[in-house]
Image (cartoon, rainbow, N blue to C red; front, side, top):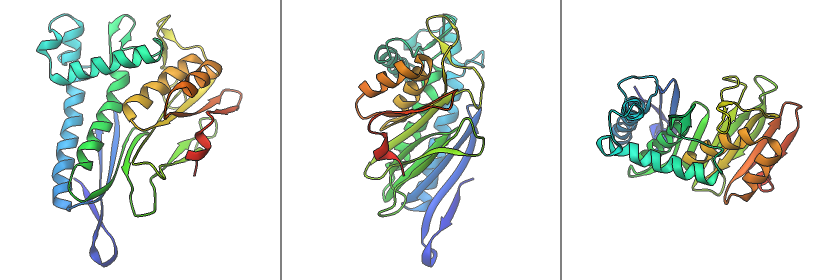
Length: 267
Protein backbone atom coordinates (compact mmCIF):
# COMPACT_ATOMS: atom_id res chain seq x y z
CA UNK A 1 0.00 0.00 0.00
CA UNK A 2 1.28 3.47 -0.91
CA UNK A 3 1.88 6.01 1.84
CA UNK A 4 0.89 9.65 1.33
CA UNK A 5 3.09 12.08 3.24
CA UNK A 6 1.60 15.52 3.85
CA UNK A 7 3.44 18.81 3.79
CA UNK A 8 2.68 22.22 5.35
CA UNK A 9 -1.00 22.89 6.08
CA UNK A 10 -1.86 19.30 5.24
CA UNK A 11 -1.02 19.57 1.55
CA UNK A 12 0.04 16.28 -0.06
CA UNK A 13 3.81 16.33 -0.49
CA UNK A 14 4.67 12.81 -1.55
CA UNK A 15 3.30 9.38 -2.32
CA UNK A 16 5.80 6.65 -1.46
CA UNK A 17 5.76 2.90 -1.85
CA UNK A 18 8.14 -0.06 -1.70
CA UNK A 19 7.51 -3.27 -3.66
CA UNK A 20 9.40 -6.57 -3.61
CA UNK A 21 9.73 -7.82 -7.17
CA UNK A 22 12.46 -9.16 -9.48
CA UNK A 23 14.38 -10.42 -6.47
CA UNK A 24 14.89 -6.91 -5.08
CA UNK A 25 12.96 -3.93 -3.70
CA UNK A 26 11.66 -1.12 -5.89
CA UNK A 27 11.09 2.14 -4.02
CA UNK A 28 8.83 4.87 -5.40
CA UNK A 29 8.76 8.55 -4.43
CA UNK A 30 6.23 10.68 -6.32
CA UNK A 31 5.86 14.42 -5.68
CA UNK A 32 2.83 16.49 -6.62
CA UNK A 33 -0.37 15.49 -8.38
CA UNK A 34 -3.65 14.33 -6.92
CA UNK A 35 -2.85 11.53 -4.44
CA UNK A 36 -5.71 9.37 -5.68
CA UNK A 37 -4.57 9.65 -9.31
CA UNK A 38 -0.98 9.01 -8.26
CA UNK A 39 -1.94 5.90 -6.31
CA UNK A 40 -3.89 4.57 -9.30
CA UNK A 41 -0.89 5.11 -11.57
CA UNK A 42 1.37 3.58 -8.94
CA UNK A 43 -0.77 0.45 -8.86
CA UNK A 44 -0.44 0.25 -12.66
CA UNK A 45 3.33 0.78 -12.46
CA UNK A 46 3.73 -1.95 -9.82
CA UNK A 47 1.58 -4.33 -11.86
CA UNK A 48 3.88 -3.60 -14.81
CA UNK A 49 6.93 -4.62 -12.78
CA UNK A 50 5.34 -7.92 -11.78
CA UNK A 51 4.31 -8.53 -15.37
CA UNK A 52 7.87 -7.87 -16.54
CA UNK A 53 9.13 -10.33 -13.95
CA UNK A 54 6.67 -12.97 -15.11
CA UNK A 55 7.59 -12.45 -18.77
CA UNK A 56 11.38 -12.13 -18.46
CA UNK A 57 12.42 -14.18 -15.43
CA UNK A 58 14.88 -16.90 -16.43
CA UNK A 59 14.14 -18.60 -13.10
CA UNK A 60 10.58 -19.39 -14.20
CA UNK A 61 10.24 -22.33 -16.52
CA UNK A 62 6.91 -20.97 -17.81
CA UNK A 63 8.08 -17.39 -18.48
CA UNK A 64 7.90 -16.26 -22.09
CA UNK A 65 11.64 -15.61 -22.21
CA UNK A 66 12.35 -19.16 -20.97
CA UNK A 67 9.95 -20.64 -23.49
CA UNK A 68 11.46 -18.46 -26.24
CA UNK A 69 14.95 -19.67 -25.32
CA UNK A 70 13.77 -23.29 -25.57
CA UNK A 71 12.22 -22.66 -28.98
CA UNK A 72 8.65 -23.16 -27.77
CA UNK A 73 7.62 -19.64 -28.81
CA UNK A 74 8.62 -17.16 -31.49
CA UNK A 75 9.19 -13.49 -30.71
CA UNK A 76 5.97 -12.69 -32.59
CA UNK A 77 4.06 -15.03 -30.27
CA UNK A 78 5.42 -13.32 -27.15
CA UNK A 79 4.16 -10.20 -25.43
CA UNK A 80 5.11 -7.00 -27.31
CA UNK A 81 7.56 -6.10 -24.53
CA UNK A 82 9.76 -9.04 -25.52
CA UNK A 83 10.52 -7.65 -28.98
CA UNK A 84 11.06 -4.19 -27.47
CA UNK A 85 13.55 -5.45 -24.88
CA UNK A 86 15.39 -7.67 -27.36
CA UNK A 87 15.78 -4.72 -29.74
CA UNK A 88 17.13 -2.55 -26.91
CA UNK A 89 19.49 -5.33 -25.81
CA UNK A 90 20.80 -5.70 -29.37
CA UNK A 91 21.45 -1.95 -29.49
CA UNK A 92 23.27 -2.11 -26.15
CA UNK A 93 25.36 -5.02 -27.41
CA UNK A 94 26.34 -3.06 -30.53
CA UNK A 95 27.10 0.19 -28.66
CA UNK A 96 29.23 -1.64 -26.09
CA UNK A 97 31.16 -3.56 -28.77
CA UNK A 98 29.67 -6.77 -27.34
CA UNK A 99 30.79 -6.14 -23.75
CA UNK A 100 27.10 -6.17 -22.88
CA UNK A 101 25.34 -9.32 -24.01
CA UNK A 102 21.69 -10.50 -23.94
CA UNK A 103 22.95 -14.05 -23.56
CA UNK A 104 24.38 -16.09 -20.72
CA UNK A 105 26.57 -19.10 -21.51
CA UNK A 106 25.14 -19.18 -25.00
CA UNK A 107 21.48 -19.04 -23.94
CA UNK A 108 19.12 -16.11 -24.44
CA UNK A 109 19.06 -14.04 -21.23
CA UNK A 110 18.24 -10.31 -21.54
CA UNK A 111 17.77 -9.84 -17.79
CA UNK A 112 20.77 -7.50 -17.69
CA UNK A 113 18.64 -4.83 -19.31
CA UNK A 114 15.20 -5.67 -17.93
CA UNK A 115 15.43 -4.13 -14.45
CA UNK A 116 16.62 -0.75 -15.67
CA UNK A 117 14.12 -0.75 -18.52
CA UNK A 118 11.25 -1.69 -16.19
CA UNK A 119 12.16 0.94 -13.58
CA UNK A 120 12.46 3.66 -16.21
CA UNK A 121 9.14 2.67 -17.74
CA UNK A 122 7.45 2.79 -14.33
CA UNK A 123 8.91 6.24 -13.61
CA UNK A 124 7.73 7.65 -16.92
CA UNK A 125 4.22 6.29 -16.39
CA UNK A 126 4.02 8.07 -13.03
CA UNK A 127 5.42 11.31 -14.46
CA UNK A 128 2.48 11.45 -16.88
CA UNK A 129 -0.01 11.98 -14.03
CA UNK A 130 -1.36 15.54 -14.10
CA UNK A 131 0.35 17.78 -11.57
CA UNK A 132 3.24 15.44 -10.79
CA UNK A 133 6.44 17.49 -10.59
CA UNK A 134 8.94 14.81 -9.60
CA UNK A 135 9.39 11.02 -9.66
CA UNK A 136 12.14 8.81 -8.30
CA UNK A 137 12.10 5.05 -8.80
CA UNK A 138 14.88 3.07 -7.15
CA UNK A 139 15.19 -0.52 -8.32
CA UNK A 140 17.69 -2.27 -6.05
CA UNK A 141 20.00 0.75 -5.97
CA UNK A 142 19.63 1.80 -9.60
CA UNK A 143 17.60 5.00 -9.81
CA UNK A 144 15.57 6.85 -12.44
CA UNK A 145 14.76 10.46 -11.53
CA UNK A 146 12.38 12.76 -13.41
CA UNK A 147 11.58 16.38 -12.56
CA UNK A 148 12.40 17.48 -9.02
CA UNK A 149 11.02 16.80 -5.53
CA UNK A 150 10.60 20.49 -4.68
CA UNK A 151 11.09 23.81 -6.49
CA UNK A 152 14.81 24.69 -6.55
CA UNK A 153 15.73 21.39 -4.86
CA UNK A 154 17.01 18.54 -7.04
CA UNK A 155 16.91 14.80 -6.52
CA UNK A 156 20.13 13.48 -5.00
CA UNK A 157 21.45 9.89 -4.89
CA UNK A 158 24.19 8.52 -2.68
CA UNK A 159 26.65 6.07 -4.25
CA UNK A 160 27.80 3.40 -1.80
CA UNK A 161 31.53 2.97 -1.22
CA UNK A 162 32.25 -0.68 -2.10
CA UNK A 163 35.37 -0.75 0.09
CA UNK A 164 33.84 0.93 3.15
CA UNK A 165 30.49 -0.60 4.09
CA UNK A 166 28.06 2.07 5.19
CA UNK A 167 30.09 4.85 3.59
CA UNK A 168 29.45 6.89 0.45
CA UNK A 169 31.80 7.22 -2.47
CA UNK A 170 29.87 10.17 -3.93
CA UNK A 171 26.53 11.95 -3.99
CA UNK A 172 25.00 12.55 -7.42
CA UNK A 173 22.77 15.58 -7.97
CA UNK A 174 20.14 15.93 -10.68
CA UNK A 175 20.31 19.73 -10.52
CA UNK A 176 19.52 21.25 -13.90
CA UNK A 177 18.37 17.95 -15.43
CA UNK A 178 14.77 17.05 -16.19
CA UNK A 179 15.77 13.39 -16.24
CA UNK A 180 18.75 11.64 -14.72
CA UNK A 181 19.56 8.09 -13.73
CA UNK A 182 22.28 6.38 -11.73
CA UNK A 183 23.28 2.70 -11.96
CA UNK A 184 26.07 0.77 -10.28
CA UNK A 185 27.62 -2.60 -11.14
CA UNK A 186 30.15 -4.30 -8.91
CA UNK A 187 31.06 -7.14 -6.61
CA UNK A 188 30.20 -5.64 -3.21
CA UNK A 189 26.61 -6.90 -3.03
CA UNK A 190 26.50 -10.02 -5.22
CA UNK A 191 30.09 -11.13 -5.60
CA UNK A 192 31.63 -11.92 -9.00
CA UNK A 193 28.37 -12.15 -10.95
CA UNK A 194 29.31 -10.08 -14.01
CA UNK A 195 30.30 -12.28 -16.95
CA UNK A 196 32.84 -11.56 -19.66
CA UNK A 197 30.77 -12.22 -22.82
CA UNK A 198 33.88 -13.38 -24.67
CA UNK A 199 34.61 -16.23 -22.26
CA UNK A 200 31.30 -16.91 -20.51
CA UNK A 201 33.18 -16.78 -17.22
CA UNK A 202 33.22 -14.13 -14.45
CA UNK A 203 34.91 -10.97 -15.70
CA UNK A 204 38.56 -10.63 -14.71
CA UNK A 205 38.87 -6.95 -13.85
CA UNK A 206 40.70 -4.56 -11.55
CA UNK A 207 37.41 -2.90 -10.62
CA UNK A 208 35.14 -3.35 -7.61
CA UNK A 209 32.43 -0.99 -8.84
CA UNK A 210 31.34 1.19 -11.73
CA UNK A 211 28.66 3.86 -11.35
CA UNK A 212 27.24 5.40 -14.51
CA UNK A 213 25.14 8.56 -14.71
CA UNK A 214 22.98 9.54 -17.68
CA UNK A 215 19.43 10.44 -18.69
CA UNK A 216 17.95 6.95 -19.11
CA UNK A 217 18.24 4.06 -16.67
CA UNK A 218 17.69 1.54 -19.46
CA UNK A 219 21.08 2.49 -20.89
CA UNK A 220 23.17 3.41 -17.86
CA UNK A 221 22.36 0.04 -16.27
CA UNK A 222 23.81 -1.67 -19.36
CA UNK A 223 26.79 0.70 -19.57
CA UNK A 224 27.75 0.06 -15.94
CA UNK A 225 27.81 -3.69 -16.58
CA UNK A 226 29.79 -3.33 -19.80
CA UNK A 227 32.35 -0.89 -18.34
CA UNK A 228 32.90 -3.14 -15.33
CA UNK A 229 33.70 -6.09 -17.59
CA UNK A 230 36.10 -3.93 -19.62
CA UNK A 231 38.24 -2.93 -16.64
CA UNK A 232 39.21 0.52 -15.44
CA UNK A 233 41.32 1.76 -18.35
CA UNK A 234 39.18 0.58 -21.25
CA UNK A 235 35.96 1.16 -19.34
CA UNK A 236 36.81 4.77 -18.52
CA UNK A 237 37.83 5.52 -22.09
CA UNK A 238 34.65 3.97 -23.47
CA UNK A 239 32.39 5.86 -21.05
CA UNK A 240 34.13 9.10 -22.05
CA UNK A 241 33.12 8.40 -25.65
CA UNK A 242 29.39 8.17 -24.89
CA UNK A 243 27.27 11.34 -25.14
CA UNK A 244 25.58 12.63 -21.96
CA UNK A 245 27.15 9.87 -19.85
CA UNK A 246 29.50 10.16 -16.85
CA UNK A 247 31.16 7.46 -14.79
CA UNK A 248 32.79 6.78 -11.43
CA UNK A 249 35.08 3.73 -11.33
CA UNK A 250 36.65 2.33 -8.16
CA UNK A 251 39.44 -0.24 -8.34
CA UNK A 252 40.30 -2.99 -5.91
CA UNK A 253 43.35 -0.89 -4.99
CA UNK A 254 41.04 1.96 -3.85
CA UNK A 255 41.84 4.12 -6.86
CA UNK A 256 38.98 6.34 -8.02
CA UNK A 257 38.72 7.19 -11.72
CA UNK A 258 36.10 9.56 -13.12
CA UNK A 259 34.99 10.83 -16.51
CA UNK A 260 35.75 14.46 -17.18
CA UNK A 261 32.24 15.78 -16.65
CA UNK A 262 31.34 13.90 -13.48
CA UNK A 263 32.31 16.79 -11.19
CA UNK A 264 29.36 18.79 -12.48
CA UNK A 265 27.03 16.07 -11.19
CA UNK A 266 28.47 15.80 -7.69
CA UNK A 267 26.63 17.40 -4.83
